Length: 298
Image (cartoon, rainbow, N blue to C red):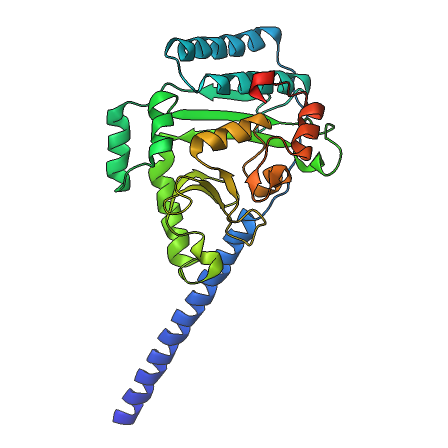
C-alpha cells in the first residue's frame, strides 16, 4: 500500500515538473515571436490624397501663430518652426500622408507644459526629467507629433531610397510608460552591465519609444545629456549619438526633414556616430525632397 502511494506521489511530482518545463518553453516561444514582430521593418506604402489649399492654409496659420508667439518671448526654439514649415512644403510637393496611412500628414504642436504638470510626471517616474529636455517641455511644447509618409511611387535614388517616412515626436504624458518598458528591457534582456552591448542600455533616461522596440534616451553619465539610440536587436545604430543634447538632436534631425526614428531611416545621415545635417547624403536628400532651408538655418 505504501509503495503504491509513493509511486503515485512521484508520478504527480514528475507531471508537475513536466508541466512547469513545458510552460517555460511556451513562454520562451511567445517572447521570441514578440521580438520577431518588433523587428519587422516591412513598409507598405499607400496612395496619397493631396492636401487642399484650405488645409494647407490652416496648418500654415497654426505654425505662423506659434512662430509669432516664439518671437514675442524671444524663444530660441523659433527656428524649429522654420524647419517644420519647410518640411511641410516638401511634404506637400510629394503628396505625403501620415505614418498611420491617414490621408493627411500630421503637424501637431501642443502648448508648453506647466511646472505642476512636469512635477507630477516626475513623481510618477520617481526621478527628475533631464534638464535640457525639461526646458523644452516647459518653454516650447509638452507634445509634438509630426508625421509624413511618401507616396508608394515616390522614392529617392540609392542609398536614400529606403527613407520613405518620417516623424518628430515626444509626449510628456508618455514618459512613465516608456520608463516602465525600458526597465523591462533591462530586467529581462540586458541584465548584465558588464557586457559591452548591455552596458549601453544603462544610466539612461528613455524619452521616445520606437515602434520596433528600440528606444531613444538621454545619457545620464558621460557624455551627459547626449541623446543616444538604444537597439534591442544588434542594430547598427546602437549607441549612436543623435544629438549632444535634446535641443541639438531636434536641430540636427529637423534639418534633414525628420526621417523616421527607426535606425535604418536616419543612419544614412550619420557621420562618425552622430547625425550630421551637412553630410553628403543629407545635402542630396534635401535637394531631392525639396527641403529648402534659409541660409541662416542650414
